[in-house]
Structures are given as C-alpha cells and as structure tokens.
Length: 249
Image (cartoon, rainbow, N blue to C red; front, side, top):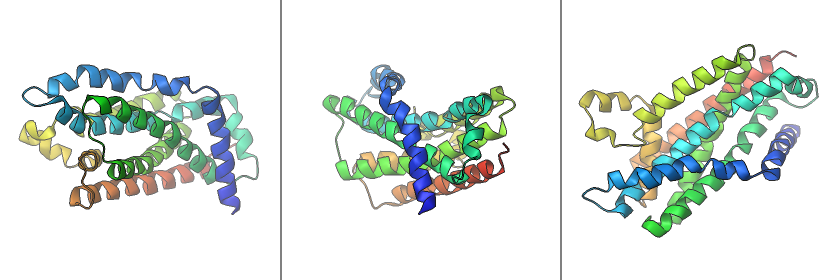
C-alpha cells in the first residue's frame, strides 16, 4: 500500500503543473492537425476522405504517443541539473514509485489529445467504433507508459550530457515512426522495406490501432498489438525502476 501511495503522490505532483497550464496540450495538437489537413488529401486520391481518415488517424495517435512520451525525460534532466530529483531521492518515498507516477501522468494529456483528434476528424467522415477505439487508447496508454519510463531512464543515464538525451531519443523514435508505416502504407514500398518493418515492434501496434479503428476487436492483428503494448510497458517500467534505484544523490 505504501508503494501505491507513493505512486499517487508522484502522479499528483506531476499533474499539478499540467492542470495549472493546459495550453501546451493544445499546442501539442498542432502538428497532428497539420498532418490531417495537408497529408490526408494526398492519401484519398482515387478513394474517399473518410477511408483515408480511418487509416490515417490511428497512425497519428500512435505518433503523438511515441514522440509525446519519448521526450518526457527532458523535464527530468532539468530536475537533475537543479537538484530537485536528489531531494526526492533523499525522502523515504519508493524510488520506483517516482518513475511509475511520472509515467502514468503522461497518459492523461495524451488521452485528451487523442480524443480531441478523433472528434476533429469525426465531422469529415471518420467512423466511430467507441468500444474498439477506447480499447485502442488503453493499448497506447500501456505503450506510452513504457516509453516514458525508458525516456526517464535515458535522462538519468545522460545526466552529465543532456545533449546525449536528445540525440538518442530522436535517433530511436524517428526511425521507429517512419518504419512503422505511420504516414504511408509500408506494403506499397519495396520488398526490403516491408521485411525491415516486420522487425519494428511499432509496426504491429500501428496495425492493431488501425484494425481497432476499423471496428475489429478479436483478431490476430489486435492480439499482436496487445503483446507489443504490454511488453513495452513491462520492459520500460522495469528499466526505469532499475535506473532510478541506482541513481546516486
């Protein structure tokens, strides 16, 4: 019970600045909206805008989750440099609870942004499948919690070289997104690119989200997405907990 109380304390502490100034959550929607406005018309050539949205919106939400959580460790680098984190490490609070609470906090603004994106696309033809879509958002919450924890672990490892955090996070997140078929169908590319995408875990999550947004639920595609999201959460939170346990004062 003490661990869960510490997680709640960490979560509440991180949520207060977000609730005090929610404007940055709206700013985070600018890039996905621009993609919807200027990229979707290129996809509906020979088809319909509704079909293009049904395919494209899930990819945008995955991209929002990936980049939104991959960069959250930057805030921890600032706390490391200012000494704020050291003060928390000196308290009786559980160290893993600090990471768990911070990672769970990241799910709140991402969920609101994802819902806003869905509602914006709805009048233009996006078909709503509420149960499947909510399940898809739950999968992304699992995935995002794992990625956020990995981001915090990277921030702790790069505490003496903050530029290293930015270089590594971008060098990993960008290839994952491009090879995951977020923007364009990978199957339309050369064979070697499709084969390479099969080794990218994000590909299976993107495919699962598209299946869920199309109204599917109990399919192999969705099952692969569940395994990837759950696996990322377990691995990410485990690495994050290990990193903060070893963090020195």
